[in-house]
Length: 404
Image (cartoon, rainbow, N blue to C red; front, side, top):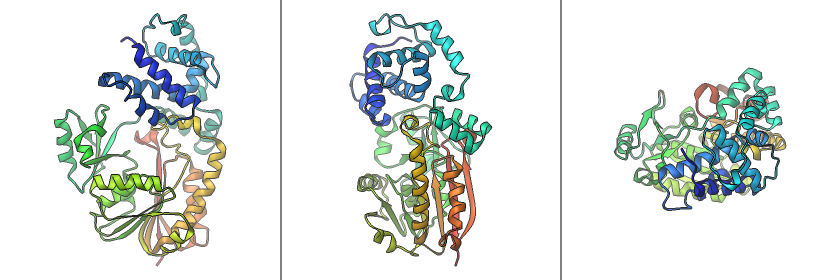
């Protein structure tokens, strides 16, 4: 267990890009992994995991190292030293790590861990908000669960094969997976692996999608031959799932404000062999009005704070601001009111978010049901999924039916 200089330098450069230049961690990590063709899988694993670890525990490590933003390179080395000491690495005799106070680091870790916001490495406002919305006990468990690295979950593309055949194909590539109870298409990787480089991925046999996210399409109860609208399709993980549940029969309209996201979805759909999808950019209110009362099923996968997916996006802890959450609640209300009009009488709607906050979830649904359009809907059921209970992402989904 020794530290290699070129891997650590890459880690420091990457942290500088994330913390000081506002870049997204996943993009920075992807770039870092291409840096040296000679690196083996264990080298790449070290770089990716170390960057994510230090991003995840930024506040805790910065407090232990007694450094403040903006971090210069010396500060980043001090934070790295904290990581190395707490992970049990012997400190090499490099100039940047000279005089690393190992006993002091361990002592400060014990002392600072008594304060939850520092121990769980989140801003104070986020800790206060979590307590206010979920209560002390639930929030303490939830934020601890959100700091565990996310498992890699695959969703079998049933347009191209079965879960069993996919498992065998991956087994031949020395990628071991396990089934998930009550999840008809999911496989969990036993160990992390770059599945995107496999022929199985390039042939469209699977997508990477969290287990709780995989429940949404089934919850909407889509069937072959229906007209289904995904109003906030994004890059389309749930759109592709619905296409496979529809067996490519019927019409699936994928909408988004951003053309770039729909372009990405088109590429994914081609790889998946999903050809019942139409793409529409929401560039005016007309796009929505044309669809009023035309759809059997509507998915509103609403923009949200993302406080259910921190384990997957640890850098969003530092990018999120309290004002953003206030604004996003207004957007959610508008989206729910406007897009619900697409559902035809007798049709169904799912409102979903990847947040664990009641103010973005059940409170939005309750508020909607009191509006003029909302009174035309009946609440059927909802599901609140916490990372602390499921081990997967935090999610919310509510199923509503439009009265005939």
